[in-house]
Image (cartoon, rainbow, N blue to C red; front, side, top):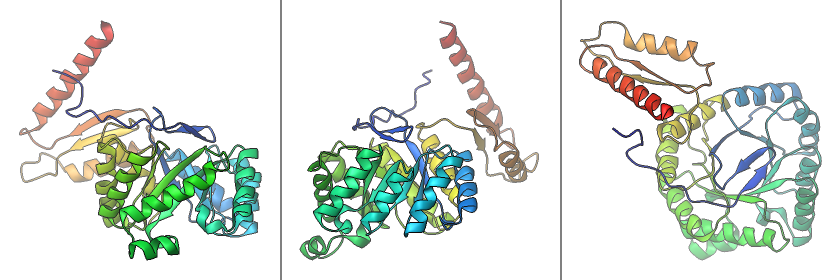
Amino acid sequence: MSLRPFRDIKRKKTKEINVGKVKVGGSNPISVQSMTNTLTTDIKSTIKQINEIHSEGADIVRVSCPDEASSKALKEIVKHVDIPIVADIHFHYKRAIEAAENGASCLRINPGNIGNINKIKEVVKAAHDNNCSIRVGVNAGSLEKDILEKYREPCPEALVESALRNIKILEDENFFNLKISVKSSDVFLSIQAYRQLSKTTDYPLHLGITEAGGFIPGSIKSSIGLGTLLLDGIGDTIRISLSDAPVKEVQIGNEILKSLNLRERGVKIISCPSCARQGFEVIDTVKILEKKLSHIKTPITLSVIGCVVNGPGEAARKEDKQRQLQNQLNV
């Protein structure tokens, strides 16, 4: 019996870039991101939340910099965290320059919203001088006016055209340390846009379903959208956008990658839904185990099966896999 999954996911090999100490793209592991929801100027609370997000298993954290005080707060924040910070910038080019100078590892911008070419050149120079990468972030809800007029509504072709236009702006400035996203709150629109973009560029792609909603609907939409793309081999870094605590975004992101055998981290619990045959309180037991084992980072698979129908078979299958793995290691 083979230990290989029923379907191997063959990822598209994209260009490798650096987001601080984290390498994105190429053959590197798919990274998980989240974003703080504290006021960035509340430095103590922001540091605390970043560290909580990191502890939950995030590789990169995004922080909003809507004003000068926020972008300058990064200088103190980065001293107390051990994870790359992406500065989220909209419209004002000086915020991007300040963020790069104050320790951001990446700038999330839409060059088309920054302003004239001279302002974009200043942002690119600041990113280059401070070893910052850039994420070109295209959203269906904020497309350029002329592109929206051309296509009449957000569609995959519109998102891709916007992305390619903005990529060219950076390439014309000899800047290539970049990644791209083409997000929408519509699952089907997002999937088609990313598929089209993946065919036209080799830059690493940041996946996400934006404004996905609360915990349950947002997790489901993100799982369907990102799972579909990841199965296609598309995607180098992901963020689950939930109207909920950032640590929950990380939990769902990690679970999506674990379910596709794209990441091994922490305890994977295989448990039955329980029924009248259960010999103990399965649901309560699983909840207790999830809480008590949440600190474990080493990959472990644990089965919690409540009756003799599937329990012995699941246990035997795990034992067989362990035996096969040991035999392979002994060869």
